[in-house]
Length: 279
Image (cartoon, rainbow, N blue to C red):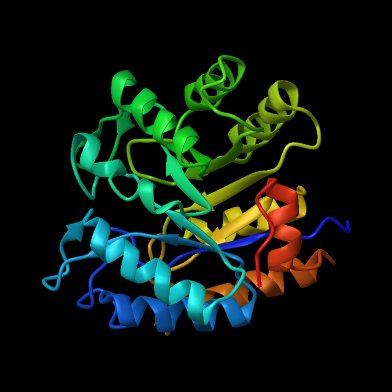
């Protein structure tokens, strides 16, 4: 299998704290340093949230602007993807950073259950976020927590709410949502190929111990992979991950196992239909 594998590193998220793992990068400076090491290890997408000094989630566009500036300086060419997820804010505050024109942004197109709450993505907010991404030329990454989210993404694509071929990411292993089930995973991949074409790029993310499982399934099946401390703070049952870069290196090893080259940022941008990096 020779198709290069894009590795996305989800550096921080909204939940893990330094009490969970001291390596979780909280400040913008920490995030830049952690991402640079992950970039050098092979990651070509940075999926980013921002935090307040007390480690609580934030949707402050100024923090996103500082992060974007630092990543562009220290990780030239890396694809910057901002989160518009519901843990970081409410309503349209979730998309306030889209005016910064990152390369990509996550887009959850439907609601589902999380461990202790309903992850709400009402249709009017989803439509607004999608329209902002169109306005500012930001490519959405569809975060699919359920089969219906893949179907909805296809509907939005047909209705021109999404400009180009969507990049769908399956998120599996969230308690009360979709488990890490191989039969379901295979049906997801078949559904993406049926709706968007055999060559449509897709990605998979596993939560907690399922991270390595989903890395293996995705890489061996021709998809792309997500890793990082947002989803998983451990290397194994007994060891905390010492960095985002360590999790990226582990994903690179899976690529080597299946003889898949790791995508450069130039290849990743071409695969995803993103604008080339201007040196």
